[in-house]
Length: 205
Image (cartoon, rainbow, N blue to C red; front, side, top):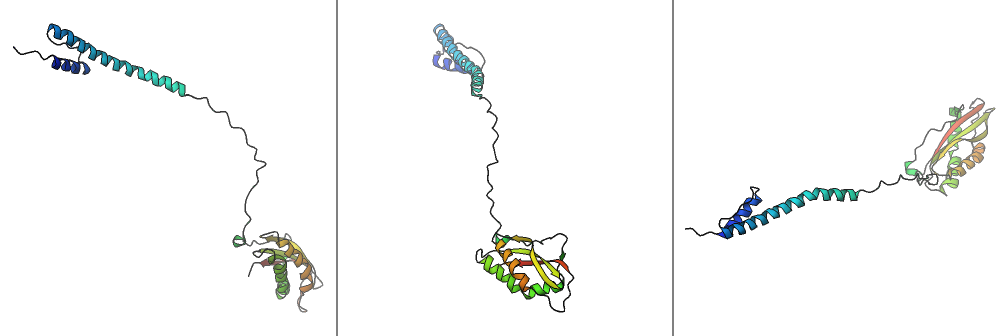
């Protein structure tokens, strides 16, 4: 008669229980009790695993509920009125000449433009002495309004200007002072009485 291997029976019973087949016992009186105990222990272990697995979702839900935080308060409005812009001034390298418009005043006729070109040394003097000595990179344009009466220049004023820096205003004042004395129409030139615009442009040589 083959001898009963109790240890092997217990291992098989545990495998059967873990596979979900059900409880299994080992033959023999003492073996049955021991096998039943082993099977019961295996079943209890499986039940403990099942219970912990079932409890896991509840625990996760409780943890999720505890992790919920209150919504943040609405942001308060910010006062931007005291902010100051920090925009750099346009450099002379990027300065673009724009046509200066003086409303209801015609452009200078050729005879008047010739007078301005003959004495352009005066305008260059104003630019270099009152402009470039303070700002070497100064660049800009000026529209002079020239009044002609009886074929003579009687008044010159600034109609519009556009400078890369405020230093250009000193050039404007020099032009108003110097050009009326320097610009002269030729004796045979004929310019009708009126006001005319002479455009001047300045940039470093």
